[in-house]
Image (cartoon, rainbow over all chains, first blue to last red; front, side, top):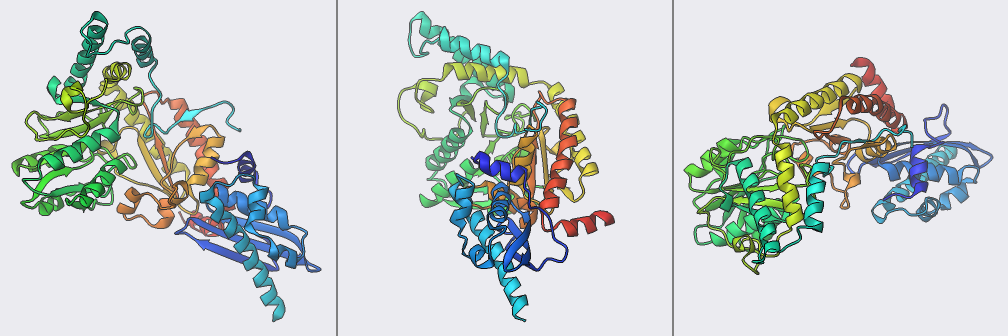
Amino acid sequence: MYSEEILDRFRNPKHVGGMDCADAVGETGNFKCGDVMKVYLKVEGGKIKDIRFETYGCVAAIASTEMMCELVKGKTLDEAYKMSNQDIVKGLKDVPPVKVHCSILGVNSLRAAIDDYRKKKGK
Amino acid sequence: MISNGMKVYLDNGSTTMVDPRVTSKVIRYVNDRYGNPSSLHFKGQEAKKALEKSREVIANSVHALNEEIFFTSGGTEGNNILLKGVAFANRNKGNHIITTKVEHKCVLESCKWLERQGFRVTYLEVDKEGFVDLKKLEAAITDKTILVSIIHGNNEIGTINDIGNIGSLCRSRGIYFHSDACQSYTKVRIDVKAMNVDLLTINSHKIHGSKGVGAVYVRDGVMIDAWQHGGSQESGMRPGTENIPAIVGFAEAVKLAMSSIHVSSMNRLRDRLIEGIVERVPHAKLNGPLGEKRLCGNVHFSFRFIEGEAINGLLDDYGVCGSTGSACSEMDLEPSYVLKALGLSHEMMNGSLRLTLSRFTTDEEIDYVLDVLPKVVRRLRDISPFKEVSHVLGRDS
């Protein structure tokens, strides 16, 4: 059912974990739908210097958050915000149609983290 | 792959390995004894003899008469034939059917279809362990009730219903009683006469036979309409040229499976696995009952803070096959209706893992699973945002 790309990201995620003194945190999802994603950001000079995630969810949910982290690391916040779930789908090669919502949650969790950063900055 | 070559198949509730002794029988009837049992020549009669011998084996296994056994293509066809056939044949007596919320999909979907044809169906609740309450069943019976259909051994959580008690109640009220025994067959003693069962569904691929074959028992005298029309095979109950190789293999599988030694050995391994998981994995909750009222091969847990499809994804990596009732594993993204009927929370439904043993499961395989499963759970809890909570709770427990 899953591409090797998804399975590999699921088995060997490189961005797992919380973050001490994160500049921002974003969370999305709930127990009911079976996925909860939490994203931690370290921002420097308007760019994402480091990104970490914690995900409660299925194979595709974990792989999607991992892929998202890989894609936006080093990008400016504006660039990162514009990332679409299709970028995650492309990065993972074949995402089963029933699992595309996992990639959307991946994007939403990132945007929630960026929103959190901007809110904190605005204060 | 990090399984070191170890492969452990613990999804026998889905299907089982075909016993090599069954395979050799099947192959003989595919290659050499290919006759059509309806033919009068020696080739046909050779097949006919094998068919009737197989019928006798199945009949004896549940204490039925030979002429009360009809071969089908499997559990789904069996349940369809019986439910629809009995419902339509007894329309003049009433239009009410009683079943439970935890039946196999083919029973529930047949019932839903019957509702669209004007029948009324009551779906009984079950208790926390998945048992049907006899009093609730009795209270649901009306003067329009024609059929009660209750699963014998639950495919997900392994609950074994007391079909003897249900059978007596139905018999005393003059209502036909059907039980889907696909999971329990050869693992729990079934005596259709002593248990007052009127209709029974069984199949082959759950007991190390091949796929594509099963059987139904229809007590002599039960009013039932044929649901498929054609020749006179299976006395017209299930027309179509019989799948002789698979039927012969089914009978062989039954002969090999009918031993209490298998059951006690599977019970021992099942309990080792259950106790081992409880001991080694914090925040693991067993679903379904313990002891004799649980199918001998069934182990079903919910793990807090993590999701079941991911558990299976990592287990697969270790060479272990299991299954889950999590919403994430279903095309409709709905968690298992069986787990829902038990009243489990979304977290507990989504964090579920079913491991189902067979008579070929070994102590070494159980040791291996008890070694890798705690690692898998720990790894996923490390990824989970709820891990802090789990660590805090972990210290408490």
